[in-house]
Length: 610
Image (tube, rainbow, N blue to C red; front, side):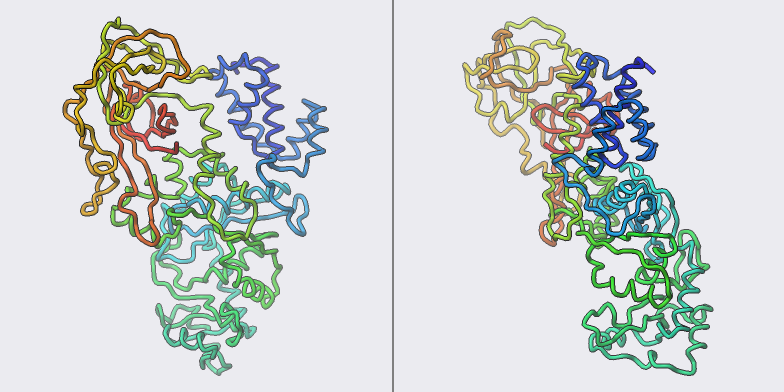
């Protein structure tokens, strides 16, 4: 440890308080902020102690909520008493807390997150997983991660890993991981039992006939009791039927206004290679059948799912009633997606498979891998999800809301660097070459970089526009300059970000190259002192000789209405400080007067948000 005992105790108390307020999960950024407010003299040491702080926060987060409260009472009795008064308040005033669970008993609540491993997890999965975990921790219960892997045609081994990695990044820690396919024998036995009890039957009708009769509310001949019911049952469970020759249907009510109860499919034959079981199984349960049985057997007390399943709740309970199994409580919440950023695999998968998108982590996607690559932090996603509450309202929150949460977290910790799009050279007369020492952060001690500045710098094309002789502006953290001449500024020589930088060529779906000028135009200026004047325009700059070509990818809406947006990725090119090439991929930075970005390579970054 590089901190003394007193500071260590203070950090623990701050982390415990934050964890108790947030259901057992302390947020490192909040702990750092609180510590800096309490002990401002530590600001200069933040770089040295942040690793120790991270370790202490992880230690606190590994404890149960009860253990956290007990340690708080021991370390800070006065704080412990205050926390008891706030025991029911799980989030700060800006974030509505989740409503209590009906029938919940402390220590006995079990929730589950049941993703299908048929793609990469997205923001909608994040909402479900976070709510499931928050409730489990709220009541000192358990969270089950259960892969709903009952369709071998859609599932792949990489998707199991992608979901695990996504949850780990979010900080969601299941207490148990399992697969629905683990229980295939159990599900088969319940399927046979349901048929024998008269609650289901084997149907050999064609798909078109089944669809037609369900629409008319009429039963087929397979539904009636017949002498060959046992033979059909043995054949379907014994593997004698081939794909599309037979299914098992629930015996509901074909005249029910709720079409979900019109003899829905419970088992179907799928001849495919399962990622875990290979070709050993061909009779697979549908989610409608597997979910209630798995929930009951896993001890789930409160099963939460999006409201698109609302009409299927009747079927969920009907299956459990007929099999005389314990019934969990069902809760619905609205699906989460953003305008222009669909979570539908129907819209995303073809773009990935055809190479139109670079992969499942393409920064234009709402997948967790994409959001991570783009520079969003998991704390922001959790806070955003919890700010929405448990609502059924079918509204799409603006993406800017998520950006606001993220900005608040990363702004105090991001290194500040300079980038000039569409660079224009400024030659400064009457100035002595110098080495400028630039702070990496205006407040925190994140180090500094030294840049040799001679008689020329680059400024952005936008800042160069409209400059005229006599204008005075400040090169940030350097000195002031007075424009002498703009005669050499050639109109139209700079690249046009609204045309040449638009995301993808409609013909090749490849990024278009930036049309940078081979010889940038030159503005002549002279040194005008170093006095900082509040009203003076201030611009970022890059020293000539220290510049590196750099591009920033700017994600935009992936879809406009129902159509893929061919201009969904803008590429802005310019010069950046050479220091930027030393940063690791994934480093979050702020390009001054441009926006927050995540380093993607030695010569590129992705715009997170402004």
